[in-house]
Length: 269
Image (cartoon, rainbow, N blue to C red; front, side):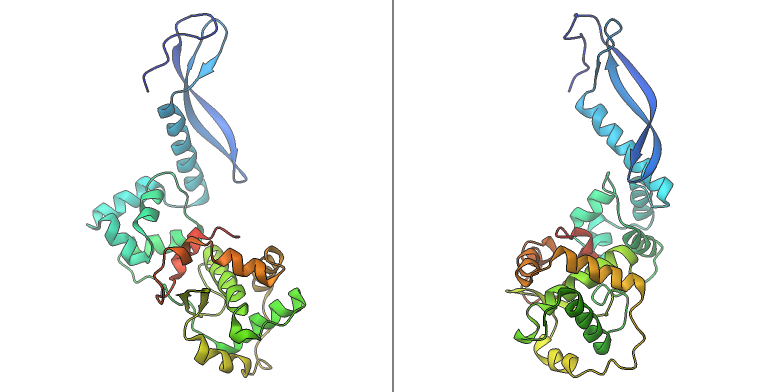
């Protein structure tokens, strides 16, 4: 888009101007450089598409620096230093190349994904993308399902885990997105009727029969995650329908595992 030459109000020649302004973004006050064309007569300010995009990029950079996250330039520079293509970095993280492109642009990664990015770009082994950086515990799976039952005031152990699998998937993915670790260590597969515990037909009887009497209680952070999912999906049909709209399910081939880094794409919560 060419520079804005004249003011639509009075025909005066518009002057380019850059200023610093403080914007409130995600709870932080950020000082960013913004640019626009200003009319010297009436004070009208107009920005080109390029100027508006630059402001968004500046906000993203300022926020990530303030929050201790890698900026887009940091990610791209570290990737190129390691000789990785965007496809190669995506493969290490278990995400699509579109995610890497967004992070190298203005899209802000979560804290947990930032940790994985730093590990991958430093040449360290990333957490297992299929278990959410936790060893599977069937008693803990049962404990989480029981917590959902208490909050939702309904049974979830019927129908071979059709609905409990969806609640578990959302809780594990949400926990990973926000803390870098799943609640249960369970693996999930893309099945025609939504995300479900991998090998659920074999696991579900074992989960139902698991002894949870000696488990330590869920901590406040775990309960908060479960409660958020329960409030968002108070009815079974709510969680069932929502799971079928999730990019992580839609973009995974039937039968394949759904890697935890796709928690970045959660749309329902």
